[in-house]
Image 1: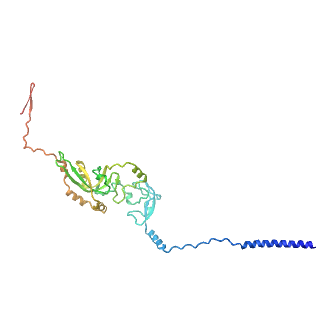
Image 2: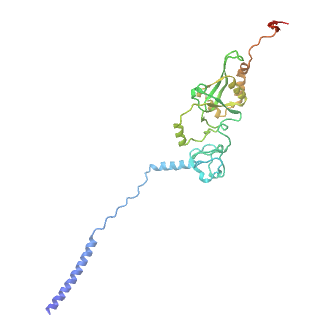
Image 3: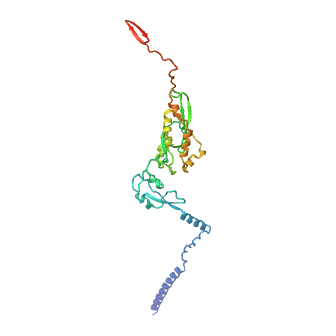
Length: 318
């Protein structure tokens, strides 16, 4: 009887121990502190002083004007597609620029333009660089130059020069003469250097990096030609002067602002008429014949006739 009671009591105690152990383990797990969650910092508030700057930047962006430029190099006579164009927003839109891509789709250029070039009405005009650098009443005429004729090789497109003529003494010209044939002619090109068109844009496309490297490595040759803008009425005079004597180009001062007056639209007709009145008639000096003895002042020599008598020869005047 006692043994059964002892076994029952032991079983109860074992079950109680198991229950107590289970509850103890469970309570111990609940009492462990939960892992700390990282505290999220509140979003930083924008600095109040930056608000006016952002507003000003937004207004500045809205004030900018769209300008269409080339997104890649474009060959001549190739229709323009949307992928060739890009829109840049500039504070001041250049005169004559396009604001919408649709205005240019399907049009073709007459010359090659590099990426980044701004398109305007002049981009679609025909003609070479020199033809776009002169007015209708002007002509572009080239002359041969060297370091002496061309201002020591320091001329540049956009300079103004006086064309001087030197006539040496000769049978046709008994006096040495020097004069200014045509003053204030604009230099369009000197050697390979070209100036700007009448719209102020470069007459040729921008030089590429590989072209610059080749030009740097290549030996620079002196300029052999210069192209001048000659008024149409003085074209024959200029050409005659280049044939009858030695020409020199005298560079004029930039302080005269002749180039600025030209781009401002200063007329040329009045200047040409003034030149016609002031120019010396060098053609007469260049083409004047040497003085001939006047008839009647010198007695003419009589013509003698040779007479042969055997081996004897004599001259007789009739």
